[in-house]
Image (cartoon, rainbow, N blue to C red; front, top):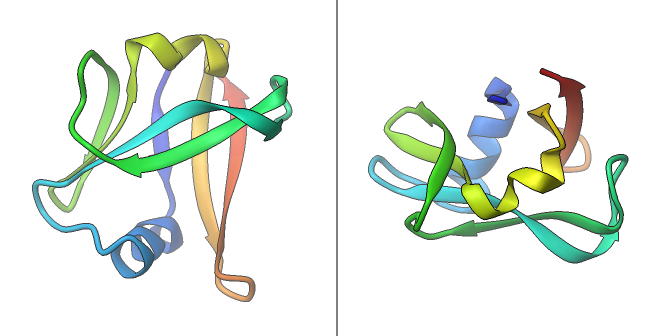
Length: 97
């Protein structure tokens, strides 16, 4: 499994979450909401250092990652992250790895 970020998504993280070189951004399974993979769960995002890093993509010195305990949520899919410049919101897409 991999994490893919578009240029627009990287810009969103830099502007909205004020990420900088050396920061860690975690994607995790959050109870509530909905996703195409699991009803009742959605993706959460937070800035914090990992406990058990499983998947990582470093862009501009920022570590975007998923922990071992959250791999079940992605069910063998790559995570694709984009941002819509009109709505200024992130979008998540899942593709079989």
